[in-house]
Length: 368
Image (cartoon, rainbow, N blue to C red):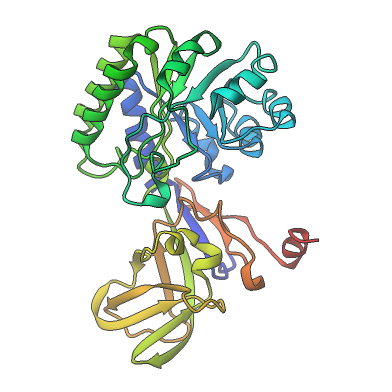
């Protein structure tokens, strides 16, 4: 096979399978179903493997709902912060469940979605997040219904609710406390419904996570209120399964050696800038050589991070950034007209498959 030109995203199905098996175990032990959050990961070339372990997909817009129906082919949940009437008329063709963000949207479109399972998002007023930017219960939040009384008055129009109130929550005590609080504050409502989604942001595939306790809590909650529980794993489904593979183009010095690679945080790992995070490095490994690794866009802050590595880097060396699946490929863009990374998959049998390459025609087609 001809060597693949960097940069490229490399998804490893064996690493992906580790997460998927945990998700399946949660379903078997607790009864909770899992639907993949497409806003995090929509690379459908690995859906053939993923749909063997998940129950479907959940979307945040019409295109994601259609993708879930056409490429995943199982249960489709369709949520949006704001649907237009045209959105509703299209999304109802693909969705099994439509989840509204507000009671005003529920009432405006309830006739349009007859025959479907309908729900609303609830903002319980509490959350778990390391970032204000991602905190769904932040001040003035527009995400979900806060008026519990009005929600109860509208119970006849819905069959379920969604509580999406976590972001990278690996704290089982916090999850348990908040699950109990949902039961106390909304238990009477849940008794009238068929299902509840606890959303995403629960890091239950993290090594060492108390999975047995997690499953027991989900099973008890489901049985107590007689509702089908759904989880919406995004990062939990794909964490640790992909890399962004890059090549060093140049090394400049300004107090510290600054390595420039053929990729960009702004264009290819945008969440690093959004949340001011440092990229994880899969290789080279740690050592004594201090270096800053930066992207090749014109943005001054296009920096992957500062590291101490075992290798003194020079042009032509390969750097592999770890954990490059979630919120990367779905957010990649054409800033500076930089070449878009290819998408490659290492299949379970070890075969390396370049499933998508991008070129100038793709760049032109994205503009007008």
